Length: 331
Image 1: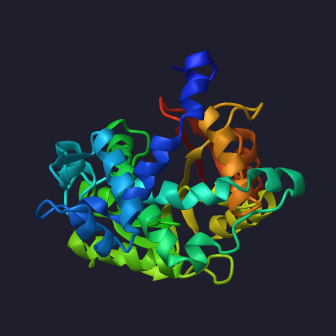
Image 2: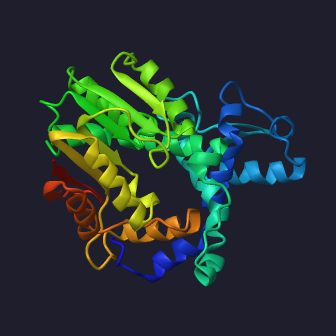
Image 3: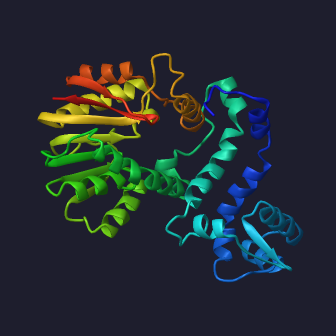
C-alpha cells in the first residue's frame, strides 16, 4: 500500500497500536535475552526485569498471545521468531531498531506541543549528549547501511576506483567506511564524527581489521577545521539534522578541503520541489522538528544551491529507487 492509499482498514491499523507498544517495550526490557538460555516462570522474569509480578504476568501473556513467546504451563520461552530477531546474540537481531523506536515514542507524544510552539521537544542532542539513546540508533543505522553501501557500489552510483583519500563526514558507526575500503584496497579513509559515534566506529573498524586504513576522529566540524585534503568526500545522513545556513557554511568549508578534481557525494532523503515526496522524508522532517528544531529533509535545489555556492561544479542528482538518493559535485 502506498502512502496515499487510505482505507478504513488502514485507519484501524493506525489506531490499534497497543500491540506495537508492547513489542517495543519487550525489546527495551530484553525479555528475550533473559529467556535465551532456558524457560522461566513469571515470578523469575518479574524479579530479573524488576517488574510488578501481576503486571509481568499480564505482559508475558500478551506477548505469548502475539506469538513472540510460547507459554508452557507456567513457564515462558522464546518463539522461533523471537529467538532469531530479538535475542541480542543473534546475527539477525533487530532489537536496536525497536529500542530506538521506543525511545522516540515519548518524543512523538509531544507532537501537539511542538506544532503549537515550533520548538523541539528533546532536551538532549542525542548524538552529542545521550549515549544511551544514541547507541541503539547508531547500531540500527549500521545494520541498514551495510546492504545500502554494497548496493551503492554494485550499481555504480559512485565511483571510487581511482580515489585514494576519502573523508567520511558524520560517518556514524563506520559502515560506509568499512564497505568502501573492502571494495577498494587503495583507499585510505578519515571518518569524522562526534565522540559518541566515533567510539562505536572504532569498535566496528577494529572488528573489520581496518585500523591501518580507517582513521577515526572524534571532532565537531563546526568547531574545528578538518586536518587534510581529500579527493572524495562522502556525507551521509548529515544535512537533514542541520539548518539551511549551517549546511551552506559546511559545504563552503568542505570545498576548501576537496582536492582539485575531487568529488563530493551527499547521501540523504532528497525531496521533490513541493517537499511532499518521498513521503518518508516529509514525515522525517517532522521528526527533525521534534528532535532538534532546526533540521528537515531538503530538496535537490537546496543541495544544488549549497554546492554551487561553495564552488563545486557538475552538480547532478543520482536518483535511486529507494527514498534515499545522492547528489554529487566536483571541484
